[in-house]
Amino acid sequence: MTAERPARSLPAWIGALGWLTILAAGIVVFAAGLPTQNDLGESAGGSPALVTLGIVVVFGDLVALRGFLVVQPNHARVVVLLGRYRGTLRTPGFRFINPLAR
Image (tube, rainbow, N blue to C red; front, side, top):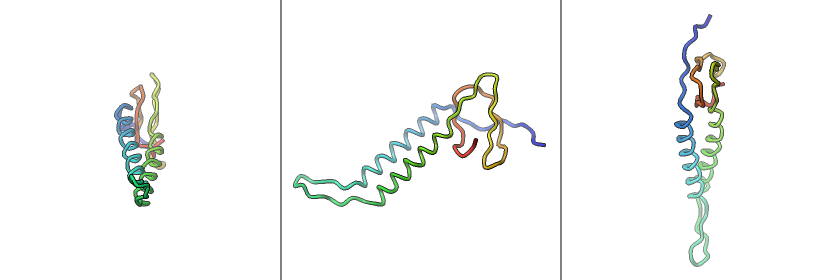
């Protein structure tokens, strides 16, 4: 038998701030890797590694959207990470948890 324990979570505004920061960083890295043109119309080489890194960061950030959830008043949400009980959320409101947890 498993004893109930509180799950760790953040207020959603903190999660959203971190999410937006990582998204912006991914877009900047992606844009920095794109080829550019100078005033003469010549193309300056881009960096495929930076483009790939930007895509990976943005994709990972989209996966992180799964971490946002709503706990209704007088309800609870059970947090399970990789099949193991991690705790119960009882604090009502918009929360952010580990995106791999459900």
